[in-house]
Image (tube, rainbow over all chains, first blue to last red):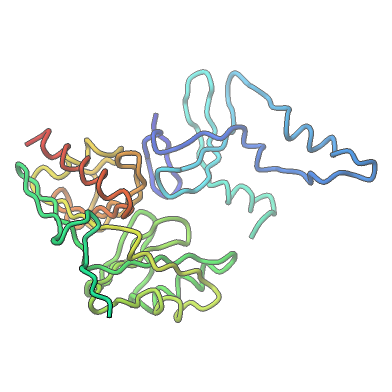
Length: 98
Length: 188
């Protein structure tokens, strides 16, 4: 499998490690609320994931390369990769980070 | 007074120099190395600081630049390594820090890495056995990090198809150079 790195071009998937659903970059506040319970939002973030048969946005880390985090859109049925973005760009586009 | 004998990364008195088949592997101990990374939000300032030292624009992703032996190569977003002859640039890290100030984080890397040069007709065939890079596609000046023998190394193409430098973590120099020699032998 080849991942088309947005900065470095096509690179072998052996250089990458898989992290999971791209929603993991949307971490909500995990501190307990006034009742001492962690928010339902954080529970959802921590434990509930979609497991689609088809297009899936997921995080990959270029561990054996430039160590950037990528958001890869991959079809879990065909392994066809339709889009690769830098996770930092995705976060910035949502108004987070600098 | 200290009376210490300098040793190479492989624990020898002299740098490794070995020709097997059509390729030669040469250890290059006489280079200083430093890394420069932009601090959060200071990407532009970091590139300007690097420019002050190397005299031209910072290398683009996957590339290196060379100005009179002062080589800069891209290692990640807003991160570069600078390689220079040790004799003239022993304090390259200090020079980079002075140029970048609070916009950059600079780390002296000389003692952390060992450089091995791989050259010869079949150099790309050796690399094909060592790492997932498409070495025959690398143009002169291409530079990237990859995995060799499960170890993160930097590969710089000095001359397309013929000459490459491999920066290896110094503590893994023995096992990585052994892997390179094994690959050289396998195609000799």
